[in-house]
Length: 256
Image (cartoon, rainbow, N blue to C red; front, side, top):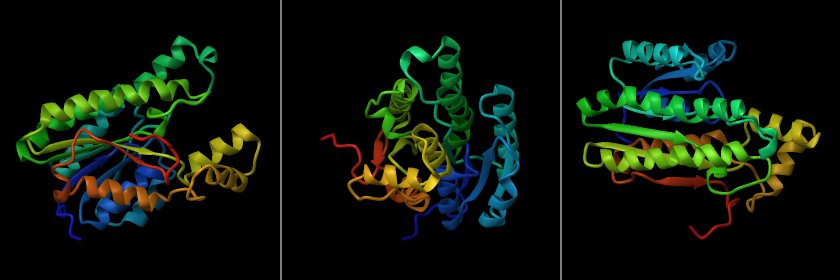
């Protein structure tokens, strides 16, 4: 299926590894020009080599407003205009409610919510001029279900989905759509390391632990995640907006 986004331009926050990289890979495969972003350059050379000539890397720490500004301005200068934005940030560190200080809350809020909102506000003028825009928020199922030790994610991620849901209705009719993707257990380096650290397991044991919690008895792949992201960016998805789409192999057992 031709998704109709060949030649479109995309900025992907936090995208040198994991789910963000899955999205970048899928968009490049559809002919989009992409700018990927990460805090460190150590992953960028390998990632750019994998993605090819349609990808460009810009280093920026999303927790720093000045670097977010640098990321946007550099991406816009490279791409000319930005028609697709994928927001992504490292999830808040796990921990019980009473273990989190006000500073912890502020840091998580700045990283997860404000960095995304800031970049959206910067990119929408380009999208309005073009009459086409796709904003994809990479969230998690922690926005849909509560778990002990996930208080920051359970609190802040739903707030960002709410903000983007309002934005979606305000942008309806402009050609700009806004959606969130809520992944469950996916086989990423972060998932392996977090699972191993919390449960005193090897990385492979952590994969098995998470996989056994999923009805499909496996973890998702970044390729599967990227395919969903690319579809939501497509011309065919122009009537999908304001949605929070769970991709989790049946992990979250809710009716809605």
